[in-house]
Each structure stands twice: as C-alpha cells, then as structure tokens.
Image (cartoon, rainbow, N blue to C red):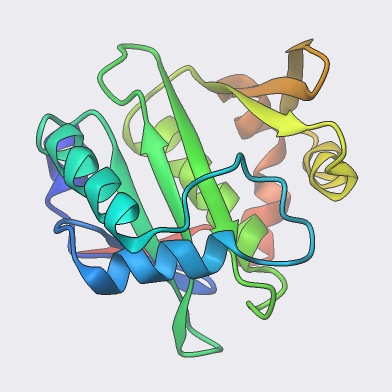
Length: 194
C-alpha cells in the first residue's frame, strides 16, 4: 500500500472495530475526542483544554497536516457496542523508515479486546502495508502500570529511555514479525480496508 492509498481509505476493518478517518473538523468529532479524554479510570493522557472551540481549532490544524500526508486521525467504531468508542492518530508518516502513534484513548465501556486489536492494527499498517522499520518512540506514563503490562505481554516493545515521568518505548519491525502470529491466530488485526 502506498501512503496516498492509506489517506484515501474510507475505513479499515479490524476484528473488533472500524477505523474511520477524521477528514473534516466538525462538532461531533470534537465532542467525541473531549468525552473520551474525560475518562475517569486509567486516564494518563496529557492535560488538554476541555473547551469545544479549542478542540475544533486543534482539528482544523490536524486537517492541514492530514492533507500533507503527515498524520491520520481515526475514530474507532466498536462493532460490539455499535458506537464510536475511541480515537487514535498515526503520525510522522513522512519519515522514510519510522512512524509513530499518539492520542490513543478508548471509552471505559469499550469491548475489552479492542485496545489490543487496534494496537496490532496500527503496527500492521506501518510494518506490513507501509514497510516502515520502527514505530516510536512514544511515551507511556510510569504510573500507567496496566499499559506497560500489556506491552510486556505482547513482547514486541523496546525500552528506549526514560525520564522522571515516562518510559519511552518503540517497536521494531523484526520484533513485530517475531510475535504477531499469536495475535493473528486469535483473529486480531486488519480484516479488510476500503
């Protein structure tokens, strides 16, 4: 898949969800993002404004980056719950060998396996479709012990460095391919895209 093809998709179907690109700045998407960022449990997101006008301004700036193929923001439609239950951004897409992901947040009531399914799908996009060598580094709050346990169980991540508040981790293509089979055997990852 070429980068331009990724940006022209209407949706990507995974085992538990549809990843639907945000292509316009609108009130609905801004409200969804704000609601998700307000979650009570396991919320280790960096502080943001909860003003709808500020969120719409952020989306306007994102649309410009999207049109330049720099990043793509997906709403995550949970097939079981039949509603949008998360968002995630794939960033740094113009880098030749690496890419990244940010702003991944799901609703507290999402289908339990959805976060891992989306994570595997984001890795799959970069490594299998865009032929990238590495995703990251991205930061994981040191207090978010559940997230680090997920990364440990997946057995794909590399600890790059840490600071006072965060572990900075990445996943290399080789580590992804060494460990992804068990997730695909469970049915996780991309099913089709259109």
